[in-house]
Length: 578
Ligand code: DGT
Ligand code: CA
Ligand code: CA
Ligand code: ZN
Image 1 (cartoon, protein in one colour):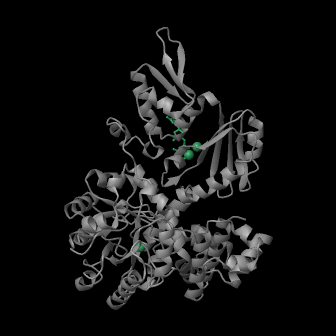
Image 2 (spheres, rainbow, N blue to C red; image 1 turned 180 degrees about the horizontal axis):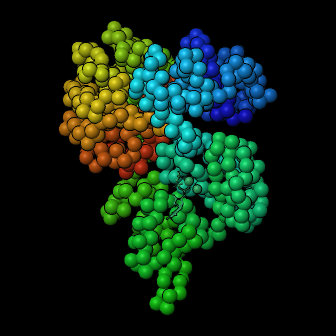
Image 3 (cartoon, rainbow, N blue to C red; image 1 turned 120 degrees about the horizontal axis):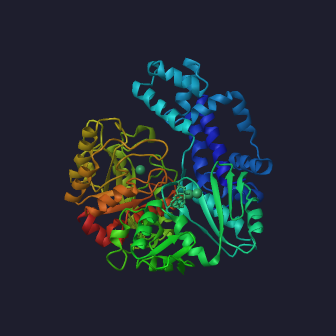
């Protein structure tokens, strides 16, 4: 029983309770605990064996949840979930997962229109019945139709962060296998792409059958798709496909290079090699002789493969055929930003709004992660579902932060921040005289995301020009697999950020990763300083910083491009301008 499965069960309970119209606090309690469990770094199954008290050590887990976790670990089942499922038609469950629907809307569709399958939902949308329901609009109907298309394609890519959990489990499973001399994960996972289609494993072994037998025993296995002499593919119960290839020691570097990709990167590499009379494939680099014969010149390491074309061993994150070959003209290759360079986190929430932890808990956790300072940035009043802060409450929170700083040493500092909504009608959600009293002000678009490109662009430009605003968070609003970015003239946004010396965020939340790597590269090239932040809603949420780092590296960002690498003194001078 994985943490993921346990968390999924609690999420499903929350969905089903919400579908049934249960008390929203109860729904939220299950959703929050699902989030905590999903991000828990140890093994819940192991913890469960130590009993209720051990589980209760986890923040937010009480007797009731602990007992449920133990039941799941011991029996693989959860009585409450089975009970809830029996009350909701199986076909309705599919409705909950359609982007744009969710439990509340699914309940309305079911009760008001009798919709209980995806087909019925589609025809209700097409007949324009959905827009007539209370709380629905023509746009909602459009969104649901789009969501149905995504669901029908059934080929959602897995978030890198989720794939990483699979990879860690897979590595732990493969490590004890005696038949393996070396193992690497290649493909888009190694490149740190925000979402991945499948996993690509490379192995050196003298006992292929031994490796494949062991591979087939990975517990989440659903079925073996194919097994050949050197290649095997399996499907996991998460539907993720994993390809395993066994290669010779002398070609390992060439294979790793080839299967890391990307395809675009490799195409370019092969053409550069060809200009030099070389041929590169997954087995090695060959010199093509005058008589047409081929001599192997490299293959055991990636560095050796690239060196034949006088290229650096590109960091995997750079290998998209976008900017890396151009960057390689200037030696040495840019030193891309690393997790160890990060000294602050400038976007996070607390119990004052929709977070799970207090100011002190967030500060302590950030400090334990090596941060030197943070900004606490709860939501502003417009975000009423998250109990966004009114002027009085913001000022009260900032007073608390002043007190915290006064009571603690100067080695760690909390900046007084706010994630202030940029209102639908334009303008900031809090008065200027309030914003002026904070240290770090974020502007965010949460509402009115369906507005025209001109309207949304204008709202963001207003915030960038605003004297008190320092950063725009998640500048395009996309949610991977769930929501397309809103319409915005990002070139104008980048130009304004440059002009007014404001930060643009790379939000590190694995579902956001916004700016994405392409837009972040565009901002970096325009001379805009970027900021990588976790947007943590609980202490465990700070673990996603590395996802943001991967995207920043994919954007070609060095330490100098990232505001979170600045000492507090420099940050105050350059960003806060005080
Ligand atoms: P994914 O799985 O869709 O997230 O993306 P990748 O990049 O992992 O792609 P995948 O799994 O199809 O193949 C892994 C790598 O193998 C890919 O990045 C480059 C290499 N590769 C696969 N097929 C081809 C091909 O037809 N031509 C070239 N040049 N390279 C290929
Ligand atoms: Ca792949
Ligand atoms: Ca593959
Ligand atoms: Zn936020």
